[in-house]
Every structure is written in C-alpha cells, then in structure tokens.
Length: 517
Image (tube, rainbow, N blue to C red; front, top):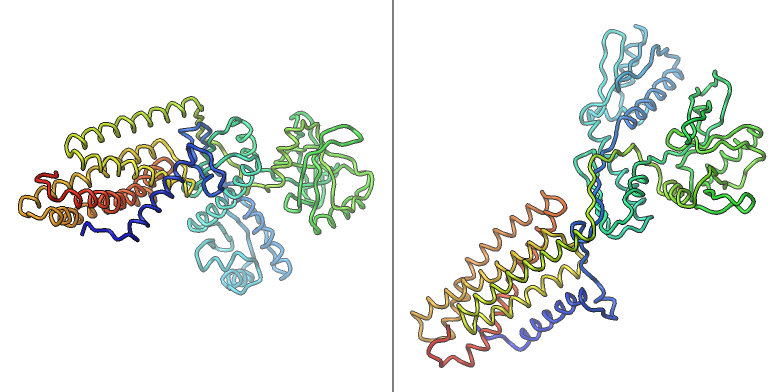
C-alpha cells in the first residue's frame, strides 16, 4: 500500500540526508573527517599525463637462460659428465654430450626430483621444452613458459612503477595491466611529465664491480662507458653487490666537498660482501654501474665495514633525489618503452567539466519542465525526487572517493533519463488503473505495484550491460559503467521509496478530489 510506517519514513529520511551531506562535501568544507571525502577528477577532467608502457622481455629471457646455462654446466661438472659447446643462440640453449652420457642427460632432465635446478619440474607443466637431435640438446621456453615469464615480469614491473610514482607523491595515479607485456599509467594533475618519463624509462639495475686491466679475468670482462658517453673502462663481470642489497638511499650534501651525493646503506649480506671487497681491493677502482653505464669509479682508500657509503657523480640535487628514489624502489625486471603518450592540459579539462555541467543542466531543466507540464503536481514530486536521486548518486561516488571522468558525467546524465522513464511508466499505469478503479488510493498503489516488473526488468538489463562494460572495458569506459550502475540503484530507491512516500502523503490527503492525475 501507499502507507509507510513512521520507522520506515525515519530511515528513508535519515538515509537521504546522510548522502546529501556527503555529496555536499564536494562543494562545502566540513570539520568532520567523514564528510571530507571528495570525488576525484579523472585525467580528462583535471588534466595530466597518459603513458602506455611496453615491457622489453628479451633481456629477462636472456638472463633466465644464462642462469639455466650456468646451472646445467655446474651440475654436470659435479657429476663428471662433459658438456661441450654450450651456448645461447636466439633464445635457445644448445649443448653437446657424448653417446655414453646421452641417456644420463635425458634421465636427469626428466627426473622431477633431480637436483639440477628449480626449472625442470616445470617440464611437467610444459614451461620448458627439451629437444634432442642425435647428441645435440636444445632447451627453450615453451609458449606457456613465455606467457608465465611475461606475466611475472609484468607483475613485478607494475609494483616497481607504483613505488616510483608513489615516492613522487602523484595524486590518485591509475596503473593498470594491458595484455601481458604492457602497463597503462594515468597521472591526473601531473605538471612535470618529463620527470616521470625519465624515472619510468630507467631500469635502475645497480651493481658494484671492480675496474680491471686484466682481459683474462676469471669472471669475464666488459667495456662500459661513463654517463658522459665519452670515457670508458674495462670492468669485471663479477658483481660485488647489487641493488638488491640496498636498504635505503637518500640524497645529501657532502660536508667536505660541498657536493651533492647519494648516501646508501646495505643489508647484512651486502655489508659483509662490501667490507670484504673493500678490504682486499684497497687501491683499486670500484665501478658503480647503473643500467650498463658507469656513474663513478672511486678508488678504494680504506676498508668500509659499516655497510654504508655514498655515490658521487656531479649530481644536481634533483638528479640525486631521483637516483635515490630509483634505488629505493628497486630495479625493474626489464626495460620499459613508452609507446604512447598523451598530455591533457588543465584548461582543456576545465572545458570538459564546463561542457558536461552545461549538458547536465540543460537536460535536467528540460526534463523538469516536461514532467511539470505533463503531470502537474506529480511532475513536481518527480522533479524533487530527481534532485534527491542526483545527490544520492554523487554521495555514493563521494563515499568511495570514486574517480569521475567525462564518460562518468555521461552516465549521470543518462541516470536522469532513466529515473524519469520509471516515473512515466508508473504514472501512465496509474491512469489506466483509475479508469477501472473508483478508489484513488488503491488505483495509485496498483500503478506502483503493476509497473514494478517492467521497471525492474529494464534496469536489470541495463545493470548487466554496465557490469560487462566494467569488466571488459578500461579507463573512461569503466567510469561510465560505474556511474551507470550506481545510478540504477539510486533510481530504484528514489522511485519506490522517496517518490512513493511523497505521492502517498499527497494522495492520502487529497483522495476525495475528482482528478488527481
């Protein structure tokens, strides 16, 4: 019936008032922290940068194969089995064995309890493939193995990217997966996109290695250039410590040289290795290598056993800050390439907000005018409900601190139309009931009851579409689906609780009038 109990009226009123206050926090300031929540504006509304990054997984695959090559060589060396011509070509490991050892190799690879490595139980899940042609063995990653490796690399990269961006203090960044080798980064309100691009474009793979003149070094050597791109030195491939051993890194001014440096501290294992290397390497140059380039190569004057040190290299305070940030956040598992970049200025974002607000206002006023002309007092009730509905929608979005995009505004505008559509169905049904029913209250109640199925079916269909858009879409499409889905629930609540309550009060007091609608 149109009758509402006092308790029901109380809960409807309190619920509506709370969400109206929450929505109002976007316009007014409240002292209570609960009402300090606000709707965040998306990239297209407040401006900012959009970056699509692609992970270069080739170095990761090469590194995994290098590790596997070392494992194979060392394992069979301990077993006195001679492995010859072991090499990596086009992401494949090739090696030869003698006829008498061929079966032993096969048995070892196929034995899931083998000590050979942590890789070969993966043969059971087809992540690595073993191919034998006479006495020649070929090992490579299968398609499933490459997908698993790329997924793992992507997960690590997302975490590192998030750490780097959080360190800068960017407001409400949006970092999402795209496929299995791409990352989408949206940075609303960013005013320095070049710095972000510089930070995300660096792998930050830090190693400490000795400079050597011995070309026949046991560990192998390689020539690396300094950051100036001119000078170069020959360094050992033996890694003393890596970025994994860092606990912290901070920029500071060296009091003796008045130079900006990056001070660092090491974990227990790193401190032990660093202390041993500096005690045995006094007089040698220790190259500090970042992403394949030498930052500096100071001469070791004394043993450093404290587990802390500093990196110098003619840094400005900004570059030292960025280097410290990169080292703290950790190295990316693979290089990132920027394949798409867009920048939205704040003026363009404000234009989008203004255009969206004008569209909403025009649509809202036209709907209000139409409903009042068509249904008179009940059109007025619908308009009041419509306003409350908008506040409820904005209140829920504010409560969850949702990010509002331009398509999200479109979803709000669509909600206005959906809310009116439900009321039109109800009022037209009431007119039909009044033709066959003399009791006005029963006719109005039947109108609400009998139109419910059609209204709910229509809204459920729209809700399913919104859910599909949310899970299958991305970015702005998700913003649209969220506001549309929330709008469906607020519409049903406002129509069947708020509008019905006000209608019930009016009809009960004016039930004796000849024509109400």
